[in-house]
Length: 286
Image (cartoon, rainbow, N blue to C red; front, side, top):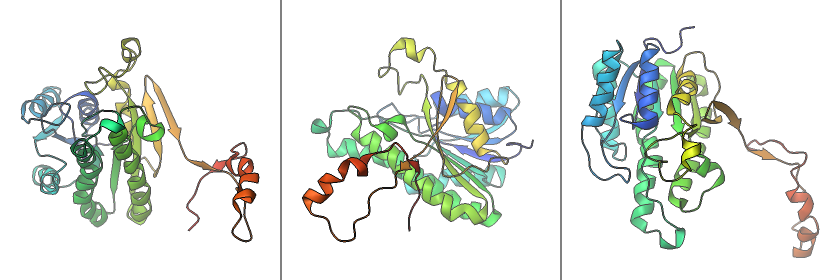
């Protein structure tokens, strides 16, 4: 199994938590890793080089190959610089793990436009920016592996996280289309919804649950999705606490009306329209 040996992989938000685990796992399995981290606080404020440098030092001390990068994924020029680091230092880019993120939680009726925008720019725009910068290289070499960090909040919602949930759900839509457009270039695009104890989840989940959610348990699934062997695409996996689980959208047979139904007619058939007892995997009918 060639796995990720000699593959150049960019991991964003790799200065701590899950990103650190991904970068270390990939490097331990032979990948050449760009460790990107802005070095800011959980809410996105501030910046620094220490976080990325520390992870690079860990990787190099263990015999792996890695270089740091401190640019912001929220800035298109910063994202381009991240990919340029891979090209300049290692001569190629084969995979992107879009993991960088921030939190600006708050109930929807209290959410400010600034809190909404800042989360979208890092998670959704950040994913777009970095992948878009890598995309021409993937197409030219007819190979690419994309993994984005979605969330169970994006899949199912979570109180106080409307901005975060919307961004994470948006990333699923992004990988679904990238999987279609990248298929003939051997580019796969998948999403992982990680369950892990990090600074992002420190005050969100009970400690007894966090104690079971070591970030190291998520990294192997991400490593596989970046590997040469992986052929899965447009798939979403919930990973945490030892569990690796695929989730997907489903659809039922629905009800077809020969002409626009009246309000009463559609109300009469609504139980059948909403019944998912015989549902099948969903697909785009177009």
